[in-house]
Length: 97
Image 1 (tube, rainbow, N blue to C red):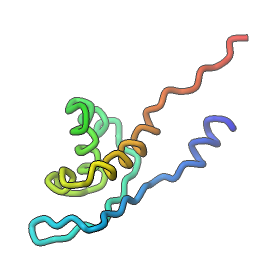
Image 2 (image 1 turned 60 degrees about the vertical axis):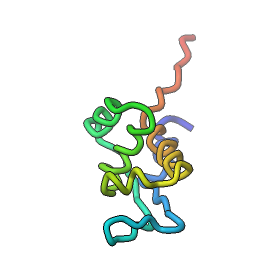
Image 3 (image 1 turned 90 degrees about the horizontal axis):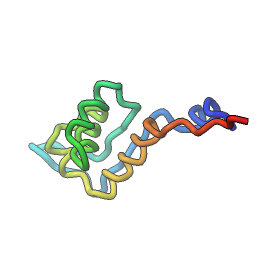
């Protein structure tokens, strides 16, 4: 499988469901749908570092209010991280033979 096939095999979005829903400011949030971040969104997130970078991406890419992104269970935040990291994996090494 070449890089193009691998990229096409991965879903373009990821929907993470919250059970129970997260309540904030009179509204309930039961899920967030993530997509590939833009270069600027990713750069802004990297400036924050650590778990805050993932929270930022969930906020800007998923469209959740910042306080809601901070209330997401850590297991769900790690699901988001696993989704985002696939866009930044280094390209596989090529053979020099």
